[in-house]
Length: 401
Image 1: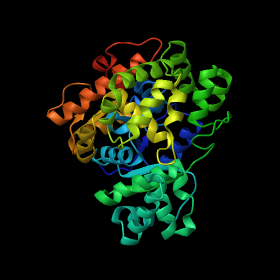
Image 2: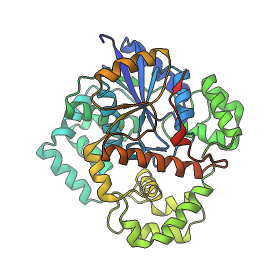
Image 3: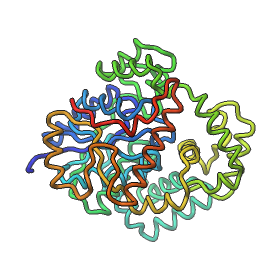
């Protein structure tokens, strides 16, 4: 199929005006005939339950510029930037139809390829600087950023941007796997990733706060109409994770029951952190208190929240290491419009992974493990809602618009 197809890795948690700008810019810059989105599942990269289920976010994407939406399974969506990016790029590349990869950035960088090459090849001087900053007590992400800045001082602060960091992670995966994907960076438009300011180009963080306050007029100003309608519908139906009280109660119960030994077996938990988490659980009275009590210079908020989600989801350390190494086992279709359905027909012939249109059992033990975890994560996510719907994952079907 000789067409330009641009892929985007996204969460749309929820989809706002800045996302619409990116969808349109990605299509225009790449002269794409269609847009394919790899969408995060029910738990997101920042280490929280998604605000809306993946089906509503799929509808938002299809209503605002995407043609085909694929699932980024929970085992990869609630993970550090490297795992998240690797799986998202792998899924898009292995469709066999995506020709371009687009992503947002806080600021342009002419040395994106150089930074990616340093991180993939890890020259001796970089390793030396990285070890120095790790030994100084910095988190891995911060130490890596400072090590790159030592080699490229003109790019000081570049990796501090959340979108810039993901852009580098995407570029590293394309480079290391030698995927034939043309990179299409788009300058982020609007507020920063964590900026809570409510305006027409508000961040997803700000939108979630507006939703918690039930500020509907502000939401309508900050979102495209189809996306706002779906979000307000979810709020009315009790289908958002706006309130973290239930999350905190369930998680605190799990932590107290598991004890330090049980906590320590969770995915990627460093020795000693289990005691800090358990002590925080004993004395916290809210989700925010629990997280804040665990955050340190070495363990930033995002990492702590991902650890807590892994504990909630029952993700074992060694199993997770194997999953990181093996990557996605299938491509699951969440939704498509008419153009997307045409793409899907081509993809079934060109993809190098099995293509699934429903939550049926895949062919291999490993693929079934990923799917079973997806089912479990969806059921746990439902339990965090005011009005949970049991077994929605098992009965859900591809959304066709």
